[in-house]
Amino acid sequence: MKLLTIGLVALSAAVTLAFLLLRDNSNQQINRAGVPSPDSINKADVEITADSLKPADLTVNKGTRVVWTNVDSEEHRLISNIFGSNNLKKNQSWSYLFEEAGEYTYHCAIHPDVEGKVTVK
Image (cartoon, rainbow, N blue to C red; front, side, top):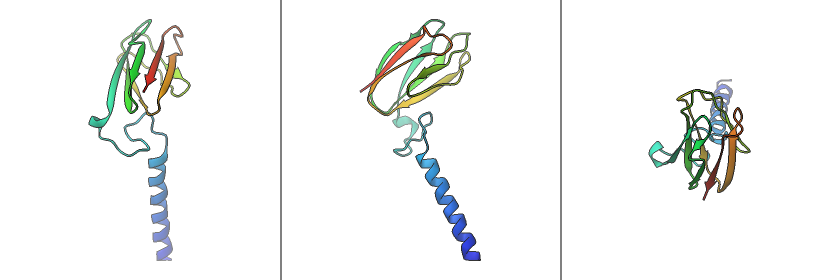
C-alpha cells in the first residue's frame, strides 16, 4: 500500500510538471522551448494612445516580446487572430512573445480605428 501511495504521488508530480512545461505560455516568460532568462528575450515597446499605436507598424525578430502600454485615459483591448489582451487601463501593460515568422495585424476591440501590425522575421 505504501509503494502504491508513493507511486501515485510521483505520477501526480510528473503530470503536473508536464502540464506546466507544455501549456500555452505565450503571455509568460516561460515557453515551450525552455526557460529563458529575462535578459535573453528581445523586447519591443508600443504605446497605445487615444487614436493610434506608436509605432503602428513594427518589425521584430522571432523570439521578441512586444510590450504594449496604454498611455491613454481610456481603456483599450488589443485583439488579433493569435492574441488578445484584457482591458488595459491607463499605464497598464500587456505583452506577447512572437515565436513564429509572419505578419500579424491587430486592433483595439474598443476603438476599432486604432490598428497596428507586427512583422516577425
